[in-house]
Image 1 (cartoon, rainbow, N blue to C red):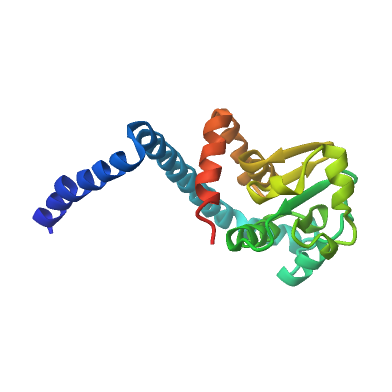
Image 2 (cartoon, rainbow, N blue to C red):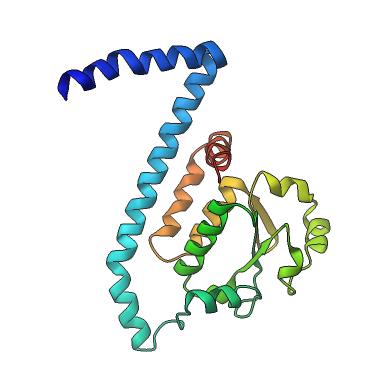
Length: 206
């Protein structure tokens, strides 16, 4: 395996890099490598946070059994509850691409990691009538955005603020169980790089 791996690293990878440079240029190669490295680091950090979350899950379970935490809903109950904001006066609305598999999986992940799913409303922009508690036209007027913008980036309304793309994802994670609020450290990454990382993943959605 050693010689084969060495031959692959020495021959195939540089060859692919040359083809990429010939097609897209040196600057695009450097930018894409940096973005993919950052995405890899972020994915690794996300996995570490999920491991920590699973480690402290028994303590949260005990807390709920003792009646010290919010009632945990089943996945179907949480999905139904998320259609309306019931337990908080602060708006928390996620407007997402309802036909994007990755977006839907992320939404299911978020619902399962929220201390109280009732505090967040989800709205697929292709089917605004699916959530009778929300008026997307009124939201478009209030926050001065167009439906076309939602085709490229997820949007989150947090109180009187609206966040897009990577910033929206970070905001959503701050609503989740510990340690996911540490995702706020991602704001230390310059916005253009955060946005490029988000678009890199978004373009590969299926």
